Amino acid sequence: MKHKCSTTLLLSVCLCCLLTIAASFVTSALYAEEVDIPKLRVKAERGMQRRKTPLGGMYLNGKGVQKNLAEALKWCAESC
Image 1 (tube, helix red, strand yellow):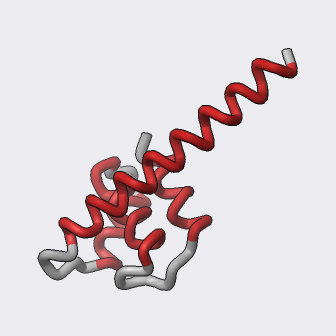
Image 2 (cartoon, one colour; image 1 turned 135 degrees about the vertical axis):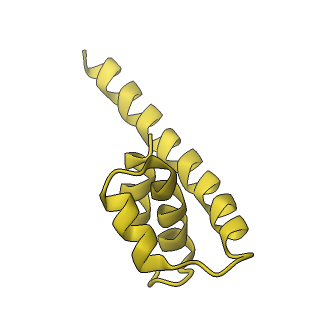
Image 3 (cartoon, one colour; image 1 turned 45 degrees about the horizontal axis):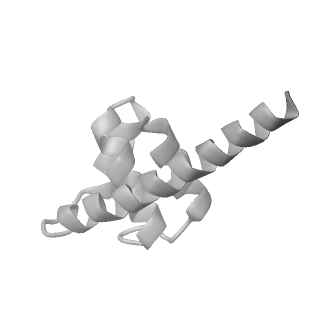
């Protein structure tokens, strides 16, 4: 049982890493245009999946918001 838990944790960490990398690409694409961050956050909080990953990327890269790894991981994990 202990082995299964550590494997699940490792897979979760890998998934979060992949999501943050994807989020940084999405964020770069979004910053080709102006982004209304408060609007984006409200839409993400209301459950719009397509808005969660870009918001996570913005927190990851510090684009338009203060850089915050915990917030980045939160939004990217919620986007799954």
